[in-house]
Image 1 (cartoon, helix red, strand yellow):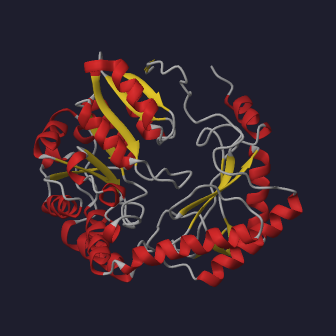
Image 2: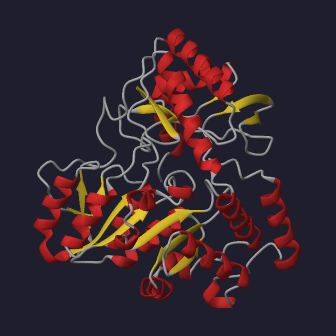
Length: 411
């Protein structure tokens, strides 16, 4: 039997031990953390809708009308009207014929990737894709070609090598740890040229980039060339769950073969109603997206004024790469002592040698608070002798880099 305590001690010694921190207030630009008021710089509640009064009321009303749970899988005890209505709204928002709800982004990615690719086929995956995509590739039993981050020449090389075995290209739209955006126009062109489906994970793009917050696919103008768009309800839309938008043939196929959909209880009606109200607010008040972008720019500018290198981020995600895991944790704790909660992110979430503070702006932040946070983080960094490095320097990529273009067989 494995010695779990010994393994935990190894994690502590390497600076990779994790613990839960207790928040005693709703999500927002400021929270009560372990009894102390903190400026929050690490939430994915990008538009500040998780605590919006209209969203809360929608969840409350749905609980009173529909109850708190869905009872079972939608294939077992029926598909509730509230689920179908949100799917219709999401499909319209993403300019796709159909949508399908999932219990979480992780379930959606693992389920869809493994459903759309199989043995003898090849999935093409950016080396900095989210862990849920990586695990979906493994579950598919297809071969996986891991192309260098945002490198379309390397992707094209892999597509040529795979010939007619290419089944799926999958990429994050906005990369969750670096905040950069995938070159979707070029990727879509390659997918069409090589007759390969294209799937884009818009978990960190929906509500944050593109016209009206419609995401990175809309920003690139390739809605008709992307086959599958995945997104979450638990980030900018302030609720919980995920969705996949595609044509009716793909969604019908997923209903019949996608294991996380078939074998998971459906989303609770209050979460569905909350997400639908948040989507309505986004459509009615697109200025929130502009405010989010302005706040992110203000945060980057303030951090740079402190002499901190925040890398190539173009979005609301602002990484400050420190390098060593223990030093990243020390900077996180130093910021906490100064009233700023900016979480340290360490391997395996990011590549070894690129541990960082992953900071996120919210549309509800005040610029003066973001500037104060930057000053406090700068002071903590100077006290600890921590110098930020541009994202991506100082370590290996999250997934094995295949400079020879080798095809990986997923375990």
